[in-house]
Length: 116
Image (cartoon, rainbow, N blue to C red; front, side):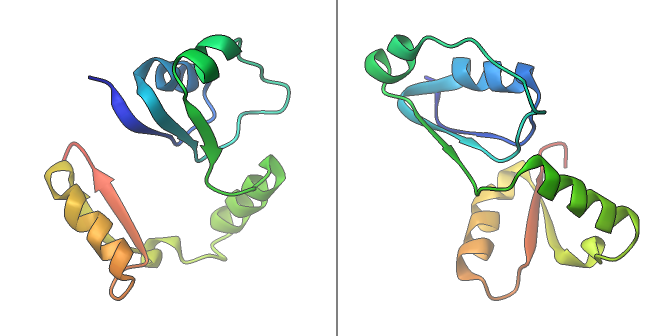
């Protein structure tokens, strides 16, 4: 069985291709990061939408320029990003991570570290 939801956290074409191969029929691919401008990926519209009914969506409408600005702020030390990570959990604790985010009481950013 394939995944009902695939979250792509990079703009790498290999990750996008892998996501397309990993999502179950009727599933969703959530794109969390953009590709570089001008990148194209050949996909079968018939296969994607009509045969497999895959939903493609994004986390928000951030542009590559937004990411560039964010990276510059992080590099300059303007944003206290280390302080924003309130929890680091192992893969077995993913459910707890989702609960922490859903409750929105004691967490800002919850990081799942599969190798942990």
